[in-house]
Length: 340
Image (cartoon, rainbow, N blue to C red; front, side, top):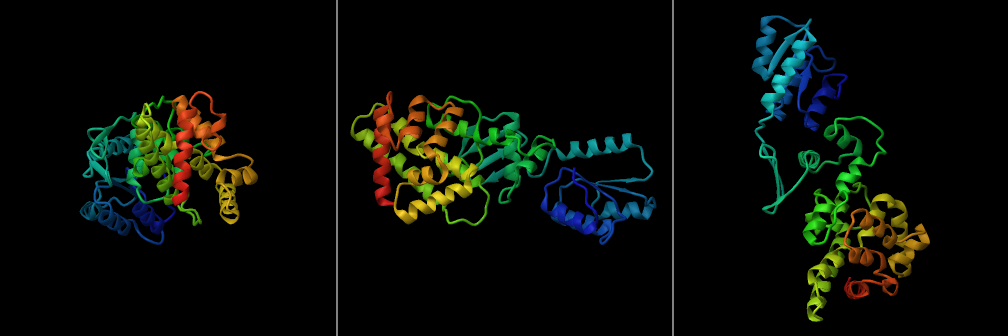
């Protein structure tokens, strides 16, 4: 629940945040409640508004209802009646005019409780569905972990909790295929950029010299080269080779998310000295994207061969059980870097 200190703040908050319900007093400072109501009704036609005020004249009720209020309750009132009126308004608003949310090729049917991406259904738990709905309703806005916790979990607690990270980065799932990996990665803009680099869309939008498109292009390019070479040499599973190429730089996403300043310093060192990124990371951070990528790959319980690719694609000689796939990804990675 958010509380506005005056009418101008109430008008701004009601315009910027997608609330389920507004309880509006008419006697507000700086801007009266009727003006706020008129503004909200123009900007949020379907937003339920309950006027709660000392004004009990019939003229005041008529004015507010004609201006767009959904209900009017004069003071003094019973909290039981207020709660009942709120529940009634929320019941009516649960069939919203915007029952289907659409962001590019991602569609969310809030009535049928169905999510689709490019026409293909995405199976989500109820909490995942609520999280996706909140993110889509705030598409284009920057949302914090605290905002997600408050609006999706309806809780207020320590914002250092990793509950949001678990849902966005995915839980413990056994990803043996590209589709399985997409599911385990989650659903927030993941398919936009072929999985692994999709998490870049959740990074803070501060100005940086790093271009996420570079990582997207390299990962996708590496995946395509891996599959092409795999087909040429009759590799047993070209699809697995494609997925391995796509995920090999998974640790870069982790480092950008967890250690953005340190990673950017490593990135600048690599560019300035013309050395491989993993060498610059080791010098600047004491770890590489291979190390952090392995931790996330194991957390997602990716297939063992994918974990080895993420871990050893810069040191294939250390790979034991899946050296062939690791070497294939290293070759594709080198070929793509030659053309970057």
